Length: 143
Image (cartoon, rainbow, N blue to C red; front, side, top):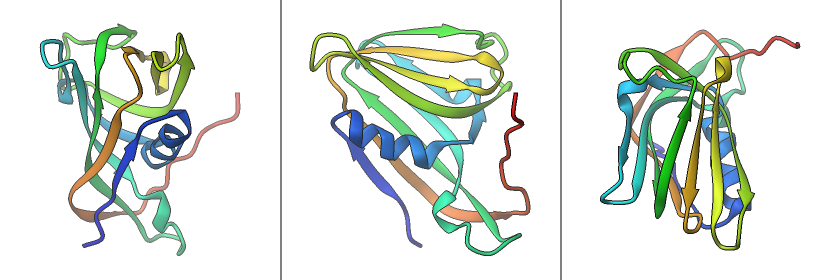
């Protein structure tokens, strides 16, 4: 298995992780905020963009997206009372507050978002196991 393991310590590093989790899907119940530990984790089924060479042969993998040094998390338009609701991660973006502190935004399809208040950028993306096949490649309609 060729498992992906990435770390991000600045905004440029986080762009690389964002590219790998674009169109990842998960459930609201798989988003875990642990304020005492100052960390947020998301278990996702990421689309394996790095292997989209042959038409019709696509993969997804179970992955863990982890953010450390998180002071606070705010959610908008995410139904935390419905843990089996599906979310689709579109992108991750950063706004520097007072370096190294920043806001990290996780933006989901349908207008949902998480805003992380971080001391500094310290994130990772780790594949958790083997890939499985899918015939579907994520697409986005032009608005």
